[in-house]
Length: 379
Image 1 (cartoon, one colour):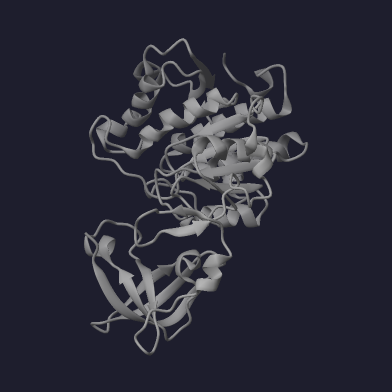
Image 2 (tube, helix red, strand yellow; image 1 turned 180 degrees about the vertical axis):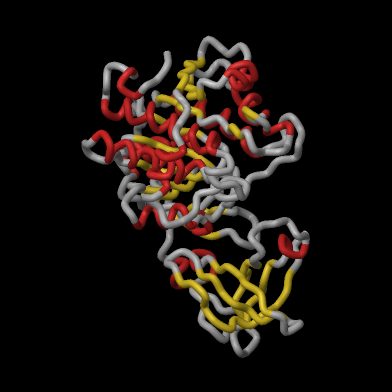
């Protein structure tokens, strides 16, 4: 059930192309912060009255402490709409059959400049392009920054990295500060949203066309598929949003890519089910037993024991432990603190190290090196 409230926009705290952060005076005269996605209801001005979805804050779900603007109200009490703006988009609806359904133009539809690519997909493969798959949004900057660090250290052209945001977390890509900053620095070549996630530079209908769009629209050398901020877990064996990784790994393989899974690893998480290799990763590996993939793992006795016997379809690559000083060099490229569950690399280095290990392997594939020995890898 949705909890609604009214408010008046006092000022615009932050103004981006895809998101506005607002200070709103609520009906009880208390002030609160709210987010508005212009793609949904247009751009808001100070002084406007708005309808707010306050559900998550009211339930104290820890979803960032901000409300979400659901509608704009004019001085005459009527909704503010821009029907002409809506007509300029495509004809594919996202968030279908909800009060927030809205039209986007996807690469597959006839009006798209890339429609011909998808008219005939026979013979179109990812051609062993690395497809990096992870469960948490914090792995995205960790991986991308690791790639840039390796590129600076080794020389050569920076790879074209395309980020596909899955449906496992936030649906609006605009919510991610990481994505905005990575794009502004040129670290990401392009962004894609599929299904009911929205706001990518390219919109797609499903995961398969999103992967092909990364390869044939954005000409990606490396593809990263991860959720946006926020995931769901219930402490049950299968009740977590990260199970989507099974489907992503399978799709990447079936389209001819090289699936590389970043395991969720922690030595600081106090929850038993996430100690060492998270039960989320162990479960994904079990359900993806028939899907060829690469798993990079620190050469750590406890992790090796915990992993146990693996499928013959999985290639396991062991890595020397990452030094904290090298990780500091990786992080120095980015102004936003990279944390996971509130923990920094100083508190839980091994989590971020596994994004770095995946970057090592992806870099080798990108450079088409014949041996892994130059990267100090075990075999």
